[in-house]
Length: 431
Image (cartoon, rainbow, N blue to C red; front, top):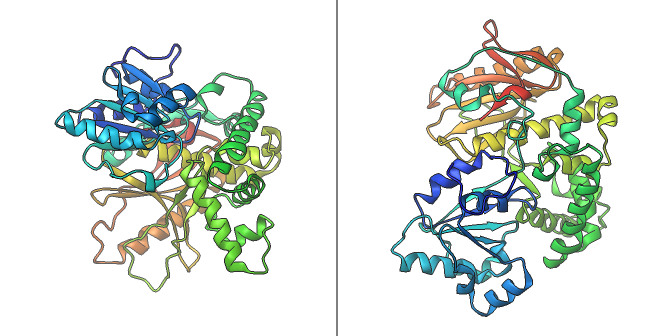
């Protein structure tokens, strides 16, 4: 990536850099959206030539009076936290039209979805959108990236010596992929994450007309059920809502979940609509994951030491870590769509943690296990899913491109020829 004038000192390159540069060559503006503090502004600045910080009161006041003020600057011009003045969106769209759609004019960053009633045009054809997450293990220097997810879809794979233990992964989960915490002591993470939640619950949630205390309770309930296709009444009850009227309580819970999604704190993973001819009823209720595994760990007051003592909890949060990295890696794969990562579950009791489906119909299935002692169990689930899909003659792509088990502790990234399955420690995986 060719850096602009604004590249911050000590900037750590992100996988999103090249995708941002590529999209700027195609459209007039790119919106980089994601949870606060994930590095959006730094990535935008690394590609930008000028910046307007709408989060500053003076800039916001000027832009509220005249949104074109925020557009002043050399292209690519960064407009940081544009959603604080939603009329900027339409001003950007109009400026792009005035410039006959000239590409690469603006980079917008935002950590919240704006009030849609205040935006009059979708920006289609003028403004593209990139969803940015916190740093993956490979971006943070914790994964070698020697096994490429894109490469697996191409059939490219070389065995790797990894020798990964569990203890460092417990630290990775509790520290998270926050750029500001890279290289910091693990104890610094709790102070940082407490500040994140103070900003979320005391500032951002009230701006949406919701209650801070109820938002905290809902967030903890979601953390306790992370990776589960939980129902709204269950979340409401776990958040200690009054359940005398379950429908009203479920609706209230839904409003908080919507707000957390709008703020890019959680994201929903949908069930895979698999090409299966079977009487098995698919379970397609979404699963919710935090945008960074450290958020769930902090809400549950988890330390690395406690994770090492509680294998079940460690496994749940390790799954969250792996799903996070799969979402990051697929987000920069040209053949992957906006929602390439799913899960599979049916009424026969078959569950598979992650399904990746590309635009052309190619798909892969992955199970997630802490250690290699669970590989046989994971392989059985993968092979059962493969057989179910293959049994449907109408399936466009009945054969998976690959099957894999992602593990925490492991000596090697290898291919089991007998089972036809890759075994890959997460610290060997990359984009």
